[in-house]
Every structure is written in structure tokens, then in C-alpha cells.
Image (cartoon, rainbow, N blue to C red; front, top):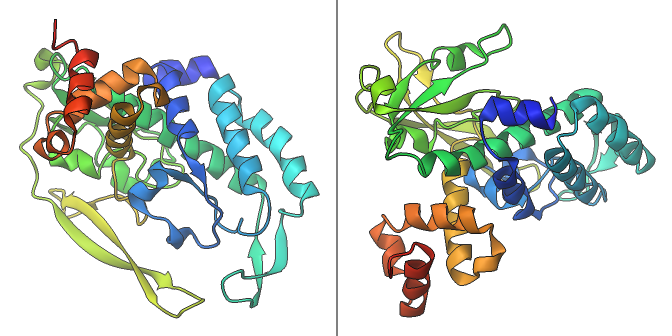
Amino acid sequence: MNKNEIAVLFQMQPENAIAYLKQKRVAEGWDWQDMLDDAHVSAFTIAKTAEMDVAHDIYQAVLKAAETGQTLRDFKRELAPVLQQKGWWGKQTVPNPDTGETQTVTLGTPYRLKTIYLTNLQSAYMAGRYAEMSAATATHPYWQYVTVNDGKVREAHRKLHGQVFAADDPVWDTLYPPLDYRCRCRVRPLSRSQGAALVQPSPKLESIIVDIGANPATGEERYAQRTGFRLPDGTFAAPSAGFNANQGKTFLQRTARLAVEKAQSAPPELAKVAVKAMMKQEKFRNALTLAQLKWVAELLGLNQ
């Protein structure tokens, strides 16, 4: 997948995706359960990197891939030697930084680098895609869930293929891709003429709590929430544990706050889209100072 292929696939400018990656802080971690849902919006983390001095290398490699349209093959070719030199490769017996206990764990592998590449780029591009679609709801008020529709698509995701809901339907708060690691699903906007006959009533959402394993350091049980709805055949359509959030929406909210506090911290057009979307929420409007409200009015051209 190169830069042009990505742009065509998602029909968006990659700048928003790059902005999404650049606003993240690098957070070393050990267990994937340490960071769930929309926490991924503000932090870049890879399991089993705590005290291993490789998290920044992986982050920079992902950012470069997004900025240059680097292929998976080149991503792995450049990053693998760096990780191997630092000892973050294959099966290793290392101490758990939380417990001090020695564990045999799998660190870097070609399969894992592919997962890192696909999941992080998909998250970034879909976050940027959300900003673009949110700015176009006046002409494209419906959104449609779309899969690649090949043999690798998860069955639960395949059953969502073609489903159409209003752009402001709460269903998109969690069922906005990616819904799992390596998820390649996307959402496309539909015009009134395209979607009016296809749009479905807002489904009844439900949440379930799933066990994601105990914390080895404390013994404390850990749980995750999955929010979705029941399809006609009884299938529970919901994100996998750890993906129960719309990272694009959370990114917009975060960007709006950054834009109001410091306009230059976000691309102007992205800031404008984010602020416009957030100003529809009373809670957000009430949180702004008079000076911030004045800046928002100027940004959106409300004083003209």
C-alpha cells in the first residue's frame, strides 16, 4: 500500500492522518490491557516495550510510513534491523517491569510488524476520515459501513457491510473502524439521494463487560466494555475489547480543545472542522472563556 493507494482508498488528504499521529505521546507499556479504547487517541503504545528502549523507534517508523506512503515491505525492511540490534526480536526471556518476574514473551516478529503497520495506519487514516466526513454532513448526512469483502474479513464485520445509519447516529460512537487489530473496514458518506432509501432506524445499543485477564503485578481483575447492537440473526455487532471507541470523534474533540487553546497546534482547516463540530455541544460551548468564544467566532467567520 503506497501513499496514492491510501489516498484513493480512503478518499482523503493524508495530512489529517499525519496530524493524528503527531499529536500522540509515546507511552511504553507491557500489557495491551493497560491502554484501552479512546486512550489510544492521545498515546502511542506497543505492548512489551516497557524499559526496552524501542517504543520511540516504532513510533517514528509508523509516522514516516504515513508521511511518505511507505509500503509494508519497506516498513519492515527498515524497522526490523533496528529492533533486532536492540534485542527486541523473537522470543526472549525478560523480566516483567511490573512484577520483576522472568517471562518468556514474543517481541518483534514480521507478523507483529505487519499488525503494528496496518492497525496504526488504519486508525490514523480513519481518524482523519472522520474529520472530513463530519464537515460534509450537510450534503452527505448518511454513513455506510464498508468492508474489503474478501476472505480475510471477520464474519462479524462482514455482517455489517452495507449497513447505513445517519451520520449523527450514536451507533458510530463505537462501531467506527477499526474494530480490531488489522481491521480494514471503513465508512463512506452518502448523499441524501444515495442514502435516503437505505438508512436504518437507530439500533438499540447495549454494552457487555468482558474479562480481559488479571493484572499480573497486582492480581486485580481487568475488564473491558463492548458496545454494539444485535443483528437480526442474533450476532452481537460490537468492537473487540480495547477498541470500544470512535477514535476519530475523540480526536476531533481533542483537536477542538487544542485549537481553542492554541490555534497553531493543529492544521487550520482541521481545527475549523473540529471546532465547528464541537460547538454544537452545549457542554463544550459552556467550557469556553469569552476570549475563546471570540476566537471561535473569528475562526468560523461568524463576525462577518
